[in-house]
Amino acid sequence: MIIGLALALAALTTLTLEPAVSPSRAATGSAGSAGAESGAATPTAAKVSTFRGWAFDTCVAQSLDTMKRWRQSHYRAVGIYYAGRGRACKKQPYLDRGWTRAVKRMGWRVLPVYVGSQAPCVTAKHKKDVRIGRNPRSQGRREGHDAVRKAKRVGIKRRSPLYLDMEAYTYREKACARTTLSFVRAWDREVRRHGYVPGFYSSADSGVRHMEAARQAGVRDLPTVMWFARWHTRPHLYREPGLARHAWHPARRIHQYAGNVKERHGGRTLVIDRNLVHAPVARIR
Image (cartoon, helix red, strand yellow):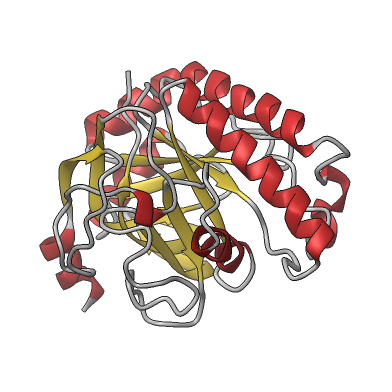
Protein backbone atom coordinates (compact mmCIF):
# COMPACT_ATOMS: atom_id res chain seq x y z
CA MET A 1 0.00 0.00 0.00
CA ILE A 2 2.76 2.45 0.92
CA ILE A 3 4.63 1.78 -2.33
CA GLY A 4 1.50 2.44 -4.34
CA LEU A 5 0.83 5.65 -2.48
CA ALA A 6 4.41 6.76 -2.99
CA LEU A 7 3.99 6.76 -6.74
CA ALA A 8 0.92 8.93 -6.38
CA LEU A 9 2.38 11.32 -3.80
CA ALA A 10 5.96 11.90 -4.90
CA ALA A 11 6.25 15.34 -6.45
CA LEU A 12 8.54 18.35 -6.48
CA THR A 13 6.98 21.80 -6.53
CA THR A 14 7.79 25.34 -5.45
CA LEU A 15 6.31 27.19 -2.51
CA THR A 16 6.29 30.92 -1.93
CA LEU A 17 6.95 31.65 1.73
CA GLU A 18 5.26 34.92 2.58
CA PRO A 19 3.45 36.47 5.55
CA ALA A 20 -0.04 35.88 4.17
CA VAL A 21 -2.44 33.57 6.02
CA SER A 22 -4.01 30.93 3.87
CA PRO A 23 -5.46 27.73 5.36
CA SER A 24 -5.67 25.09 2.67
CA ARG A 25 -6.40 21.43 2.18
CA ALA A 26 -4.94 18.70 4.30
CA ALA A 27 -2.60 15.86 3.37
CA THR A 28 -3.90 15.69 -0.17
CA GLY A 29 -3.61 19.45 -0.75
CA SER A 30 -1.12 21.17 -3.04
CA ALA A 31 1.62 23.65 -2.22
CA GLY A 32 0.59 27.27 -1.95
CA SER A 33 0.86 30.35 0.22
CA ALA A 34 1.60 29.83 3.88
CA GLY A 35 2.30 32.23 6.66
CA ALA A 36 1.54 33.44 10.13
CA GLU A 37 -0.60 30.46 11.03
CA SER A 38 2.29 28.13 10.32
CA GLY A 39 4.22 29.62 13.19
CA ALA A 40 6.39 32.25 11.54
CA ALA A 41 6.41 34.75 8.73
CA THR A 42 9.56 34.83 6.64
CA PRO A 43 11.52 38.05 6.24
CA THR A 44 10.98 38.19 2.50
CA ALA A 45 8.89 36.31 -0.03
CA ALA A 46 11.07 33.54 -1.43
CA LYS A 47 10.40 30.48 -3.50
CA VAL A 48 11.70 27.24 -2.06
CA SER A 49 11.59 23.72 -3.47
CA THR A 50 9.07 21.47 -1.74
CA PHE A 51 8.66 17.72 -1.91
CA ARG A 52 5.69 15.49 -1.29
CA GLY A 53 6.25 11.80 -0.71
CA TRP A 54 8.24 9.34 1.38
CA ALA A 55 11.63 9.86 3.02
CA PHE A 56 13.99 7.92 5.24
CA ASP A 57 16.70 9.14 7.56
CA THR A 58 19.58 7.25 9.07
CA CYS A 59 22.40 8.27 11.39
CA VAL A 60 25.24 8.09 8.85
CA ALA A 61 24.90 9.31 5.28
CA GLN A 62 25.32 6.21 3.14
CA SER A 63 27.74 5.55 0.30
CA LEU A 64 26.75 6.61 -3.20
CA ASP A 65 26.51 2.96 -4.18
CA THR A 66 23.99 2.30 -1.40
CA MET A 67 22.03 5.43 -2.35
CA LYS A 68 21.91 4.22 -5.94
CA ARG A 69 20.68 0.79 -4.86
CA TRP A 70 18.02 2.33 -2.61
CA ARG A 71 16.51 4.10 -5.60
CA GLN A 72 14.74 0.74 -6.03
CA SER A 73 12.68 1.60 -2.93
CA HIS A 74 9.62 3.85 -2.75
CA TYR A 75 11.66 6.52 -0.93
CA ARG A 76 12.58 9.62 -2.87
CA ALA A 77 13.99 11.86 -0.10
CA VAL A 78 16.65 11.36 2.55
CA GLY A 79 17.34 13.08 5.87
CA ILE A 80 21.02 13.82 6.55
CA TYR A 81 22.51 14.72 9.94
CA TYR A 82 25.00 17.16 8.52
CA ALA A 83 26.24 19.04 11.62
CA GLY A 84 25.72 20.11 15.26
CA ARG A 85 27.40 19.48 18.61
CA GLY A 86 24.64 17.04 19.61
CA ARG A 87 24.93 14.86 16.51
CA ALA A 88 25.27 11.18 17.48
CA CYS A 89 27.19 10.08 14.39
CA LYS A 90 29.94 12.66 14.26
CA LYS A 91 31.93 10.73 11.66
CA GLN A 92 30.34 11.08 8.26
CA PRO A 93 32.85 9.55 5.82
CA TYR A 94 30.77 10.19 2.70
CA LEU A 95 28.98 13.45 3.44
CA ASP A 96 30.47 16.37 1.53
CA ARG A 97 29.64 18.68 -1.37
CA GLY A 98 30.32 15.93 -3.90
CA TRP A 99 27.94 13.56 -2.12
CA THR A 100 25.02 16.00 -2.08
CA ARG A 101 25.55 16.80 -5.77
CA ALA A 102 25.70 13.11 -6.66
CA VAL A 103 22.52 12.14 -4.79
CA LYS A 104 20.75 15.10 -6.36
CA ARG A 105 21.69 13.77 -9.82
CA MET A 106 20.27 10.38 -8.78
CA GLY A 107 16.94 12.09 -8.08
CA TRP A 108 17.08 12.22 -4.28
CA ARG A 109 15.68 15.18 -2.34
CA VAL A 110 17.63 16.13 0.78
CA LEU A 111 16.36 17.09 4.25
CA PRO A 112 19.29 18.65 6.18
CA VAL A 113 19.18 18.07 9.96
CA TYR A 114 21.26 20.06 12.45
CA VAL A 115 21.54 18.47 15.92
CA GLY A 116 22.57 21.36 18.14
CA SER A 117 22.38 21.98 21.87
CA GLN A 118 19.50 20.29 23.65
CA ALA A 119 16.92 21.47 26.16
CA PRO A 120 18.11 21.63 29.80
CA CYS A 121 15.38 19.11 30.64
CA VAL A 122 16.15 16.73 27.74
CA THR A 123 15.06 13.23 28.65
CA ALA A 124 17.72 11.23 26.76
CA LYS A 125 20.69 10.57 29.05
CA HIS A 126 23.19 10.61 26.19
CA LYS A 127 22.16 14.19 25.32
CA LYS A 128 22.62 15.70 28.77
CA ASP A 129 26.23 16.70 28.07
CA VAL A 130 25.15 18.98 25.19
CA ARG A 131 22.43 20.98 26.96
CA ILE A 132 21.77 24.67 26.36
CA GLY A 133 23.83 26.91 28.64
CA ARG A 134 23.11 30.06 30.64
CA ASN A 135 22.72 32.41 27.66
CA PRO A 136 20.33 30.62 25.30
CA ARG A 137 19.82 33.60 23.03
CA SER A 138 23.46 34.12 22.15
CA GLN A 139 24.02 30.36 21.99
CA GLY A 140 21.11 29.95 19.61
CA ARG A 141 22.49 32.73 17.44
CA ARG A 142 25.96 31.15 17.34
CA GLU A 143 24.61 27.72 16.50
CA GLY A 144 22.29 29.15 13.85
CA HIS A 145 25.34 30.73 12.24
CA ASP A 146 27.18 27.41 12.49
CA ALA A 147 24.22 25.60 10.92
CA VAL A 148 24.34 27.92 7.91
CA ARG A 149 28.13 27.73 7.58
CA LYS A 150 28.15 23.92 7.70
CA ALA A 151 25.23 23.72 5.27
CA LYS A 152 27.16 25.78 2.73
CA ARG A 153 30.15 23.51 3.23
CA VAL A 154 28.17 20.50 1.99
CA GLY A 155 26.65 22.38 -0.92
CA ILE A 156 23.26 23.40 0.51
CA LYS A 157 22.17 26.73 -0.96
CA ARG A 158 20.13 29.63 0.40
CA ARG A 159 16.34 29.17 0.39
CA SER A 160 16.89 25.64 1.70
CA PRO A 161 15.40 24.35 4.96
CA LEU A 162 17.66 23.56 7.91
CA TYR A 163 15.91 21.36 10.48
CA LEU A 164 16.90 21.86 14.12
CA ASP A 165 16.76 18.53 15.96
CA MET A 166 15.54 19.01 19.56
CA GLU A 167 15.07 15.66 21.24
CA ALA A 168 12.22 15.02 23.67
CA TYR A 169 12.17 17.22 26.77
CA THR A 170 9.80 17.93 29.66
CA TYR A 171 8.47 21.16 28.20
CA ARG A 172 5.99 21.68 31.07
CA GLU A 173 8.94 22.67 33.28
CA LYS A 174 8.61 26.43 32.92
CA ALA A 175 12.25 27.42 33.33
CA CYS A 176 13.34 24.77 30.87
CA ALA A 177 10.63 25.78 28.41
CA ARG A 178 11.71 29.44 28.53
CA THR A 179 15.35 28.59 27.96
CA THR A 180 14.60 26.21 25.11
CA LEU A 181 12.21 28.59 23.37
CA SER A 182 14.72 31.44 23.63
CA PHE A 183 17.37 29.23 22.03
CA VAL A 184 15.06 28.03 19.24
CA ARG A 185 13.87 31.54 18.38
CA ALA A 186 17.43 32.88 18.24
CA TRP A 187 18.48 29.96 16.04
CA ASP A 188 15.50 30.62 13.75
CA ARG A 189 16.28 34.32 13.45
CA GLU A 190 19.90 33.68 12.54
CA VAL A 191 19.04 31.03 9.98
CA ARG A 192 16.47 33.33 8.38
CA ARG A 193 18.91 36.23 8.39
CA HIS A 194 21.18 34.21 6.12
CA GLY A 195 18.35 33.36 3.73
CA TYR A 196 17.61 29.81 4.88
CA VAL A 197 14.31 28.34 6.11
CA PRO A 198 14.28 27.24 9.78
CA GLY A 199 12.62 23.91 10.47
CA PHE A 200 12.15 22.08 13.76
CA TYR A 201 12.21 18.36 14.61
CA SER A 202 11.03 16.97 17.94
CA SER A 203 8.72 14.52 19.65
CA ALA A 204 5.07 15.24 18.95
CA ASP A 205 4.32 15.17 22.66
CA SER A 206 7.13 17.46 23.81
CA GLY A 207 8.88 19.96 21.54
CA VAL A 208 6.09 20.02 18.99
CA ARG A 209 3.41 20.70 21.61
CA HIS A 210 5.69 23.38 23.06
CA MET A 211 5.99 25.16 19.69
CA GLU A 212 2.23 24.89 19.15
CA ALA A 213 1.56 26.45 22.56
CA ALA A 214 3.95 29.27 21.71
CA ARG A 215 2.22 29.80 18.38
CA GLN A 216 -1.16 30.02 20.06
CA ALA A 217 0.31 32.56 22.49
CA GLY A 218 1.35 34.75 19.55
CA VAL A 219 5.10 34.20 19.92
CA ARG A 220 7.09 35.26 16.86
CA ASP A 221 10.29 33.83 15.32
CA LEU A 222 9.04 30.26 15.50
CA PRO A 223 10.11 27.56 13.02
CA THR A 224 8.66 27.69 9.52
CA VAL A 225 8.41 23.91 9.10
CA MET A 226 7.40 21.28 11.67
CA TRP A 227 8.84 17.74 11.63
CA PHE A 228 7.07 15.73 14.31
CA ALA A 229 7.95 12.28 15.58
CA ARG A 230 5.01 10.08 16.49
CA TRP A 231 5.91 6.42 16.06
CA HIS A 232 3.75 3.29 15.96
CA THR A 233 0.98 4.96 14.00
CA ARG A 234 -0.13 5.29 10.42
CA PRO A 235 1.60 8.05 8.46
CA HIS A 236 -0.37 11.28 8.34
CA LEU A 237 0.35 14.98 8.12
CA TYR A 238 -2.71 16.89 9.27
CA ARG A 239 -4.24 14.65 11.94
CA GLU A 240 -1.52 15.22 14.55
CA PRO A 241 -3.29 15.91 17.89
CA GLY A 242 -0.43 18.09 19.12
CA LEU A 243 -0.93 20.62 16.32
CA ALA A 244 -3.91 22.68 15.25
CA ARG A 245 -5.04 21.48 11.84
CA HIS A 246 -4.44 24.86 10.20
CA ALA A 247 -0.99 25.40 11.76
CA TRP A 248 2.17 24.82 9.73
CA HIS A 249 0.08 24.31 6.65
CA PRO A 250 0.32 23.76 3.71
CA ALA A 251 3.62 22.17 2.68
CA ARG A 252 5.09 22.76 6.16
CA ARG A 253 4.99 19.31 7.80
CA ILE A 254 6.87 16.03 8.05
CA HIS A 255 5.64 13.05 10.05
CA GLN A 256 8.26 10.60 11.30
CA TYR A 257 5.96 7.65 11.90
CA ALA A 258 8.42 4.82 12.59
CA GLY A 259 11.95 4.62 13.93
CA ASN A 260 14.89 2.23 14.17
CA VAL A 261 13.43 -0.22 11.67
CA LYS A 262 15.33 -2.42 9.23
CA GLU A 263 14.68 -2.27 5.51
CA ARG A 264 16.49 -3.88 2.61
CA HIS A 265 16.56 -2.52 -0.93
CA GLY A 266 18.94 -3.31 -3.77
CA GLY A 267 20.76 -5.85 -1.62
CA ARG A 268 21.57 -3.33 1.15
CA THR A 269 20.01 -3.37 4.63
CA LEU A 270 19.80 -0.18 6.67
CA VAL A 271 18.35 0.80 10.05
CA ILE A 272 16.18 3.84 9.31
CA ASP A 273 13.39 6.12 10.44
CA ARG A 274 10.39 6.44 8.10
CA ASN A 275 8.80 9.76 7.18
CA LEU A 276 5.89 11.16 5.22
CA VAL A 277 6.84 14.55 3.80
CA HIS A 278 5.09 17.64 2.44
CA ALA A 279 7.74 20.25 3.10
CA PRO A 280 10.72 22.20 1.76
CA VAL A 281 13.83 20.31 0.68
CA ALA A 282 17.39 21.47 0.10
CA ARG A 283 18.58 23.33 -2.94
CA ILE A 284 21.94 21.82 -3.90
CA ARG A 285 24.79 23.71 -5.56
